[in-house]
Image (cartoon, rainbow, N blue to C red):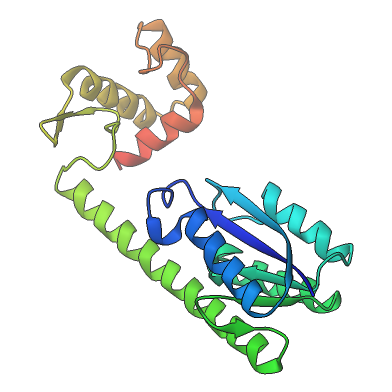
Amino acid sequence: MRAVSYLRVSTEEQADSGLSLDHQARKCKALAELEDWDLVAQIQDAGKSAKTTNRPGLQDLLRLVRGRKVGAVVVYKLDRLTRNLRDLLDLLDVFHRFKVRLVSVSEHIDTESATGRMLVSILGVIAEWERGIIAERTSAALDTLRRNGKQFSGIAPYGWRYQAGEMIEEPAEQATLETIRDLAQQGRSLRKIAHELYRLGIRPRTGKEWHPKVLSGLVESGT
């Protein structure tokens, strides 16, 4: 059987030897040899996120599948293909329609069987749940840093600056915030507020014009 392996690492994972392209390649090749498959290609996406299927390597893989050039796709882990459940199910549908087996080395899954296809779907659900939990925890942690005035990014919010990791007020920008909010309370539109700031010689950090969307956020932050 002709097979192809698909390898992927995101930018953040590049330094992780457990997920390196070389490590994935060796494991996928070993499985193909064990199954006595002809590994015709090792397709990779280096420094690519799994948030979208619009990746050069993955699209090359799908062209081989749709062209009926291969009978099996080998991955080190399912999340190398995608971390999105909907995308995973769509990919499984494509593989199934073109009679291509999806085999995961580390999870010992082969979609040739109905049980294998079910397990892939279950693992996809679990992976999506884990991502949601991580996102919630990250958001909660950032909220705590904001409330405590701790630094969590390289750029402080307008009206503030970082000093030794602590967020402290920037007097000139705080005065501008007061002006913006006073004008808003007077019923001025965002466009008129921008015009008044320009007339007063007050410029945003970029040195360009005030954008209504930016002004809207500054007004809401003080309410």
